[in-house]
Image (cartoon, rainbow, N blue to C red; front, side, top):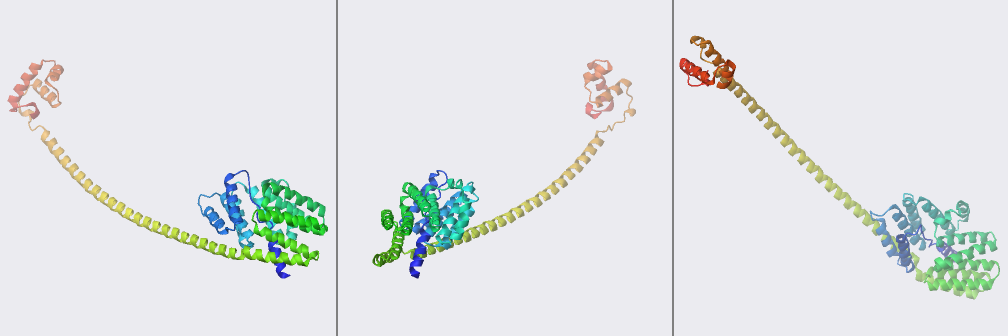
Length: 406
């Protein structure tokens, strides 16, 4: 009996495993979700995790990319009843999603997933608390498949209150939606109808619901749904006293559960996660070592550059000092030369010692000013030839050969 209870709980946990996010009409995310669903439906859960890890570790992934990847990991682990990893990835999805530009959609999607989790774990008091906080307006942000699962919860809660008619309305509405959007999940609703018709003692309809649910589960190769259908029909047979068919259903469940082997698959995923974690740590260590190496090289290069600059600065300063000394020496030499030239440029001839006429003294004074013969003639109102004549007499009198000696 305890084994049946655990199995029933596991089946209930799986009821809402496949609600998918679909905000807007983004083909990229739709394709990703379809790819992960395809992997999971064929029990290639390792491929799902590897595929999603590539998105999560890609530095170019946006916040919404990360949200969607973590959400798909949540779905994958939830499908294997690994609620520890499922909830961990759901929290990571929320953290990334709140940083995206679709915060409102993320919040309602996560809230509904939390609702599904509490429902799966049979925490109906928490389900009752969350349901009133979800408005019809918010439901526009979820896809048809998720809405069908939400309606299924509403139907189940009505059945718990023995409002069978209202419960059936919700379940029928969910059936219509899933038939159009995701028929592979129809067994989830038909299994609930088995319970509904059992309470109403409509056994024929209960068996019809079983057959329909089993048909879709096998058609889409959903092993877990096959187990779920046999689990519910087993309880149905037990309650109506058909122990033979109940036992047959239990044998079928045992066979299918062994084949499904969710525990073994969880173990493989756990090892895969450890591998990813170690790879991430190795990459971090590699990046840290690279950063340290680059930093060390940068510091050494900076020290070398500073030493070179210091040497060049010191060398430039020395050269500048030498140059200043040379300039000072040259300046002193020029000053001495200038002084000597000045002294040598002074007339060593004392004109007072010579008997020169006033006109001759005037001409000498104008020559010292740098005047030409013509300019001297103009200034003294005499001809240029007369100036030349006077200069000839002056040269002879002073015993010199040219005007530069004056």
